[in-house]
Length: 285
Image (cartoon, rainbow, N blue to C red; front, top):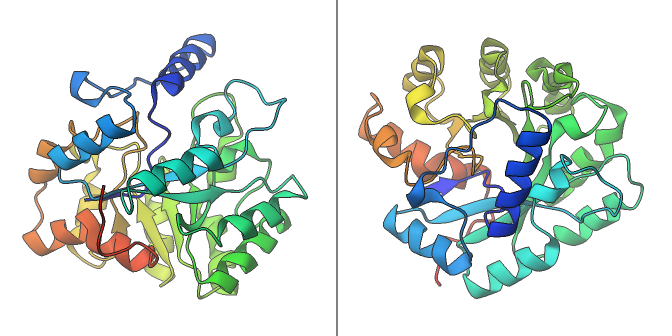
């Protein structure tokens, strides 16, 4: 299995999650049971081996000195963390550069990241920025993704906290998808509550796919399952958004999905390999 969106999983991030959830009175519940608690790298590899998880893909960015506790940068990996993980466990931990479109220096940082062996593409935590998907601020990043033939993952739909949820409307990906046909755009988090809009984008545009991060299989809507069984068989990626969904916790749910074996295999890793073409076929560590 390949998890296309896993947040930083070490113990220091657990404290951050719990504090911001309490401070902002969020309704978010961390899905980690005892078997899915925050761990160090070796502990996560052992868990991945137990759950037949080949690769975790993690957002990566620098941490500005003046960001609030609920800023997504806290919950992504630092570049040095990603480098160490990738070096110690080849192919098991890979990353996406999480862009900061309001920082003029970030485009160069994204370009440098794409030269690293661990970097599979670009990512945006949409609700951290005052920009819909078709805003001019994203255009240089879309061009960079096209130049490097890598995908771009965005959080679609609503977000927790006091943010402008409308920025995540899936339909805004139409313009970028048409302008950059060689970039695969991943509409993550199902675009909930606008799932129908998300499915329409994935149906209309050959380079738009859907990501399930933060939504465990037992809660996938019937509309999504119908899409997966039909035209969307190769258009949906499995993700956890860990710690919002635990890796081992979802295994039995995934096995219980009412889809055929070939479709399950596509969800497990086949679709992810088509999107993230830099993932190595052999992993170690």
